[in-house]
Image 1 (cartoon, rainbow, N blue to C red):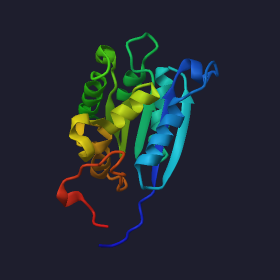
Image 2: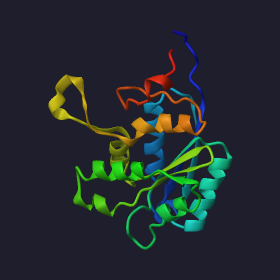
Image 3: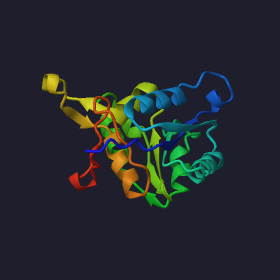
Length: 201
């Protein structure tokens, strides 16, 4: 066992809201993302935060900017519903090299445990270059639920996962596209990798 340092990672966090970006109300998406990621990862993180309006071209340009800046992971929040101004999925797909539909499918499965309107959510995830881009829900509580999943309360102290959160698959995905080795705190979200992909510490 070697005590290797944790690899640094640059993460883009993007809150998309007309009203928050113009100061009508306080943005809660960026603090929620930064707080959760800081608690979930051992890696030293450099955050690249952006607060922008619901404008497709602006969103796409921001995502490209963050990819070009070396962000291995980019998380967006907001703009994924059916309203006329909700264009985050379209803007995200417009910059994609590959679509990763499993992330959106799993987020909706988690949210359906709470509200039937989860079927109205249109979150997508894509890869552009060596960056993984994921659209998350707009509410801080929903962000945490979809990232870390749901514990099975009947499992007692074992804390067995009832529904896996999407972040369990993020580190291995980032591995596969050439990004840094991300290491999670198990109490927040246990990352899954095949045995052959796990680095000893």
